[in-house]
Length: 349
Image 1 (tube, rainbow, N blue to C red):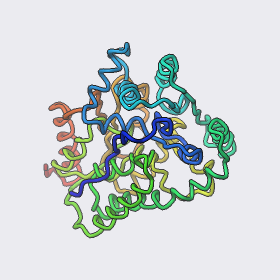
Image 2 (cartoon, one colour; image 1 turned 120 degrees about the vertical axis):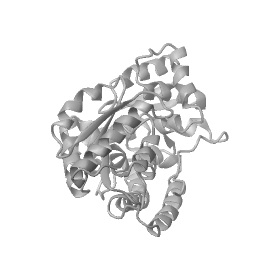
Image 3 (cartoon, rainbow, N blue to C red; image 1 turned 135 degrees about the horizontal axis):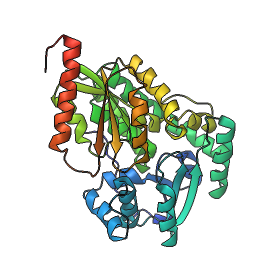
């Protein structure tokens, strides 16, 4: 398996005043238009050589143990890399982000908020994008120009996704990493595009990955990416990553307002379920893994998802980065065996 792109650590010589940390997907085109560099703090945290140390740094600073590890990791990454400007999504993502921003502002950081509208309305979205542009003293027309500049990279991400589910030539972890990295294009869109182009060329020439079952993964991107490789080791292939695919914004759009209005994650579970149901059918999924993060409010939505999708669902909960626990492996293997038994008339993997 070719090594997919990984979010890079920030170069030491990169002026920190140019960096804007984002707590989740926001209109990065505006940040580029302002001459700044967007960096997804989640990717910076999880790709660090010692992610647990970053989370523990937050606990030493007073964050409770029962706080989501992603929030603690973001805090640690901000301090480790000296990021002074942060955009946090306080409506449409994590319920802890507002408190995180308050702590960071108290410590001297410049903190901005981006609030997704309550509904998928391009007119309302246009208004909040304009507010963000005003905060960075840039023109919306320049941000729209960046939408066009990023389109080739998004098309390559879409091709990687297509090679996953239509041709089974891209592994689940590769799909995960390429799509999740599109939230900030690894702080270097041209590098992302160039490497994605090479990856697509190499992947297209592969033989299909052998598998008996086709799975999807919905929910928060897993804090334990080893999950994908374990799934493959027991005969299944993840051909759908719900949230990562949404981060990448793969479909064409005529404006930023349209592009970010189609992004389902901020608009509640029912909008997401509609998309999940469509992809379950289109990608011919045999089952769905619903990954939930410990201490996350979205855990409450699990019952709605389980009762609303057309395939069997396994709910997995993760907490800290690191190797998968034996319990998670056992539950995954049992789920795959159950699906195989249903599909093959009793033949187990």
